[in-house]
Image (cartoon, rainbow, N blue to C red; front, side, top):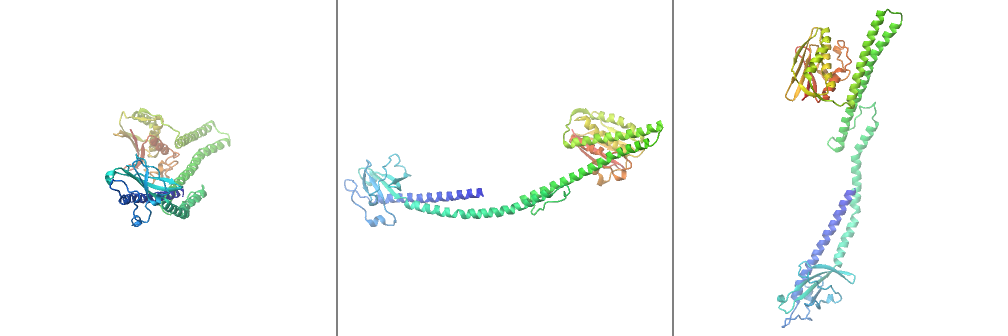
Length: 450
């Protein structure tokens, strides 16, 4: 509204300025025309002196003109020597000789509270065959000029409220129509709570600005709903995983205390309790690590490491676990691969993927471990001979607490290992994928940029 009003003011001021300038140009042209007429009417005697009392006939003065001819003639000493009848009671300012030669020698003057426009020029003796130069001043009153300008100004002042009213009403209607979807958007968002995350904003036109905001809001709500559902699922799964070992410990303790036991029985139960405590400790550590990762408070402490040697060390550490199931390792590891990594976090990639392969590989199976260096990345692969991963599950297995139904009985993990692995890979700006291992099993592929 304010900008439109400012534009209107600028338009009106410009219109008045152009109109007044056009009127003034017309007056200046008339004064130049009057100068030529005065020169034609002047008469000189044989000595070259101006005939002071010879006046042009009234018909000549008014011929083809609807205004009075107002002039004053001065001699070379700037004394007034002749003037028109209409100039008897008007005395224009004297001539400024420094400006008189200028073709644009126009200026205004006030006499008896009235404003006039004057144009003056030197009339050289050589032009009129006289013996002295003359100076001619042409005058025209500006009453008509001011009257016309004031009439236009009055008309504009009367017209200003009309467009302002129209603009105000139009702006209000446009703003109301434009803000109505925003009001609906506000109402919708205000009424959304944790029980109504499936509510979405109505999008009338996806191409306008409000439609784009509504679409972006719906996309944002989609992410919030997915995150909220994931958080609820995570909380439920975490509670279940923590409750299971606690329930086992409680049950075993109650059974143990129900009657007197032998030292061997006490030892057996305490060993089982210790296993459940180890499981609780692993769950707590894993959950803490994932939570800190989500909060973004973990910073990599990178150093240049020989990841080939680190991999060999962990294979030796996990050899005993593989031998329990009579699983053999097939190693294809390039030596002396050195990159900048956070060794404490990077080791989780090796440990979790190899442990996952041992867990799902049947007794007597084989696991192939590869590590190679390419021009822009290092590639770590672990191929097992287990049941494999269905296509619809290849993304889900990296989510927290995910254990596939078909293999749930074969592995007793909490479903956090691959989630931690993906987190560790992404911290190192890498990627992890799983593909089929022909004829059976799965291949986990980790790529880390160098």
